[in-house]
Structure formats: C-alpha cells, structure tokens
Picture: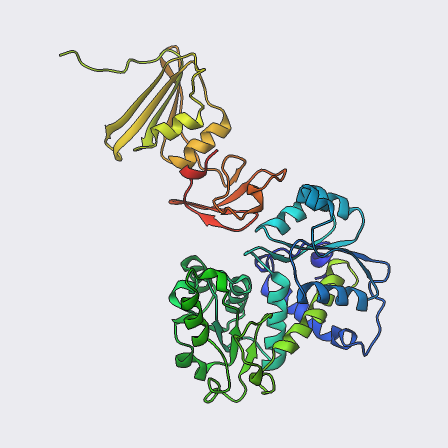
Length: 311
Length: 151
C-alpha cells in the first residue's frame, strides 16, 4: 500500500479505490491522539508543506497547518493571493513550479475547476487538492467518511440524507459518489432548482443503490441515520424572498428533530449560516464540530502517506 | 437544362458522408479562408443511402493532417476520407475517433482552469464514441457539445 501512496497526488476522490480509502481511514484513527495533542510525533520532521490558498478558507487551511505541525513538519505559503506574485498575473503553472522547489508537498485551494490537476501536472512533489472551485474536495470527503465510520462503526447500510444545495455544493458530489461506493443508501433533499443534477445521479446509480429524491425534509428525516446538511447560498437566488422561503424550509431546529432516530447524527461541512439552529448544538445528534476536528487526523494520515512517513 | 455537376478532382481530398449540416464546420476545421489557392467544393444536403442525407466537401491539391482528421471525426464520426491522386482514389478510410483528445477543442466549462491563460492544452478522455461524450481531464466536466467547442 505504501508504494502506491508515496508521492501520489490527491486530486479527486475518484482516483481512489475503496481499499485505499479504508486504509487512509484506519491510519487516521491512529493519528487521533497526536491530533488532540495527547501524544507527540516527529514523523514529518524536516518536511515542508507549501500551502497555497487562492480563496479564503478557515477549516481546511488551519487543519492542514495543524496536521503538518503536529507531525513535526513546517508550513509556508499564502492564504490570499493579493500581494503574492499571483496578483501580478503569474500563471498557476509558474507559481507551482516555483513552490515545488521550496517544499515537499503542495496543498492547493483555487477558484478554478481543474486547478489541482493542472498543478499536479507541473509539480514533481505530490499535490493535495484542498478544493478547486465547484470541483473536487477529496480530503473533505475523506473526513466526512471518517466521521460517519467513527460515529456509526460502519458506512455501509446507513441511510444518509443529504440536504441543501445539491446542484452547486462542492462537497456533495464527491461525498455522494464515495458513499455509494461504500454501500450507503442515499436520499437527496433539495428545492427543485437546487436538486442534484442528472449526470451526477447517473454516476451514483451506476455505483450502488438507487438514491431517493425528495423536496421535503420532514418526509424523510424520520428514517435518517445520518443527516448531512449543506449551505444554501443566497447568491443562487435572483429573488431574496424566494431564498428566505427555501432557507426556512430546510432549517434544522429542535422541532424538526422531534421524531428522528435516537442515534441520528447531524453533519455539516461548515460554515453554517442558519441552516442548523444553535439549539441543536447541545443535542447528542450534533457532530459537526467533531467532524471539523476529524479533518486534522485525516489530513495527518494523508500527509504521512504521500510523504512516505506512513505506510 | 444543363445538369449541375461537381466534376471529379485531379489531386486532393474528398470528405464524404459528413453528417448533414456539418459541411461548414468541416471547412472551418480544415482552415478554408481567403488565402486558399485551390478550389473547394461544398455539397450540402445530398441524398445518401446510408444516412438519408449527407454533406460532401472536396478540396483540391490538399491532404489533411492527423489533427484535422481527429477534429472531423469528432463532429462527423462516419465521414470517409478519399485521397485522390491523378483522378484515382489512392486511399480511402473512415475517420476514427481517438481515445484521447488533446489540444483541438476547449472545455465547455467556463470555470475550467484550461480556459484561463495557463500553458496547457485542453485534454479530454472519450467516454463514449456513439454519441460522442468527452470528459475533461482537468475539471471532469462531461460534454456532448463538441462542434461548438472545436478550435
């Protein structure tokens, strides 16, 4: 397994087999005490991570920083292109070729789809995609899978209800493909204008169970084992009144959780903007902050694997 | 009444069985512009036994390069190429859709990195040849709209 991972780019979840993902999840489990600061590690001492964030990000960037630092490595880079040579019009290809010579692994967040694949093309060092526009965000998918497996003991057979902006939501497409690959049952809940697109649905159907489609969360929430909530972005709606109406229908509060399964877990890639009321935070269902923490051990496992420190 | 007829050509290429309506796109692909010095004949909406209707393009004193053939295959997968030398058909073959398309069309996704000023050629994997379905190697966008995106 180690030979397959060392030096490997992590661009799209589609590049991974189920066995490879399971291997990452198992290693991530072992990283938890280090991620929590309970154990020390010098696994990646002397290694440098080049962190290139062309778009704002809090969780992804900080959890990569935390993961690298906890393993004894160092991080350099930028978190906004202004001031960097990028703002002067340098191509991504040139920036990558330069950074490639300064570090051992590159983490890239970029607004353009396909940016990570392009970076991987120009870099000799491994490139980890930290989100490319509306495209892929594979490390988010892995930490989502990790969270479900940790809370539910297994992924297979769980009824995962995914709600929110399923048309444009970055995390939704790769997550649902991965869940289908692991044999989870999927239900997609969205207003008709933001429902999952046919081509994605076809892809998911070809991998596993036929997903259910609904526009009413109330109809399906009772049977959910996992409720995965994503943000509905205001800018997708030409009419603000229409946005308010839709956003209200998909708001999770205590009232909405009246008849749910006792062991339902609620996840959210964060940031949330009113999709989940803060009163839900103190219920045992709320797992979104654990999910955000899980980004650290999962990214530790991936950094360790791609740099050859882990096998 | 005098019969209208396109005369045989001495040297050049006859592109036959072009999908109906695609002849002008073929002209664009092979770069027929003001500076062409030989005769180009275009027949549109010609009865065809195989397909009902077809288009034909004859271009004198010119043979096509592999990139042009790939482009023609993408917009008209059943087109046949007849290379004419001294009034005889020297070679005849059906165009072939390649498995990987590189540098001959742009990605239909405006947000794709290949549509920015980056030093890469757009690249596609052919997922299906009938109908032609392409997936961008960079952004993963799947498209069947080929003719609009050929450069």
